[in-house]
Length: 100
Image (tube, rainbow, N blue to C red; front, side):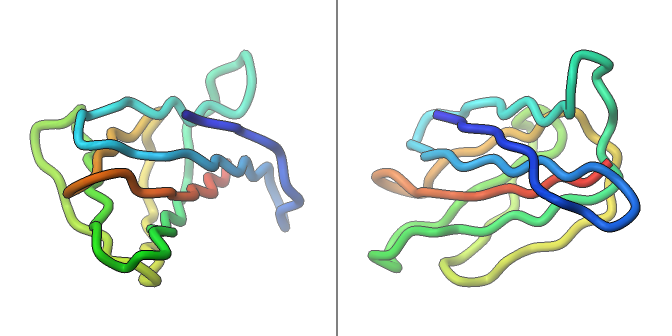
């Protein structure tokens, strides 16, 4: 599930996404508006408070995943319009802040 909302950003637009990843892959579209702006950076955080499940994130449509452990935010300078997320087990809450 995704709940995008706009947040303040210095020098550009930022959009905040909260969601829950499960063991099946799901694409998160991170477009800013109907113009389909492409990101300049992403901040992604695993918010699994049980500290038992990893958030797996892919920037290539699910071919390759990298792991984000609980409490370790990841900051990337990338140009993407979506990311693919899944959980290593159970469900994992996450948040993504994309800047444009």
